[in-house]
Length: 116
Image (cartoon, rainbow, N blue to C red; front, top):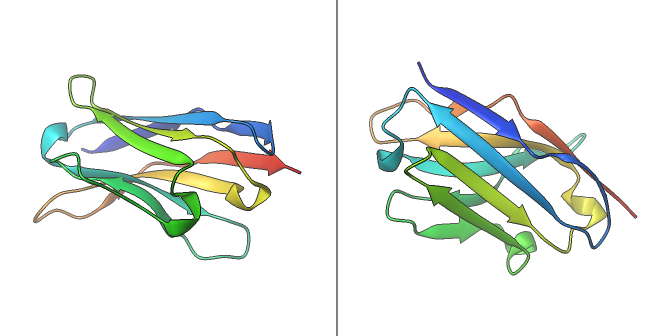
């Protein structure tokens, strides 16, 4: 059974930083594409950053140069370092895991609030 547990959300002023972490269990972590999605109030969930099993990364345009996704296969963790945060980064951030021939799995989410 896949379990994804996020941590590290909170309230921060614009221009500040937060680091999100996601601990995964129940999967062969190194084989999985991992990522972070977010959902702002009244908006659809969107992909923020993805890192595949080969450590290739993709980012939504609005966070390029500010956010960095990384993975630690030894610890079964994926992290999202968020710098220069903006109020529009506010939302619930969800950890995501997917691999070939499996259904995507999601964490319960962690709230990020950026005040102006």
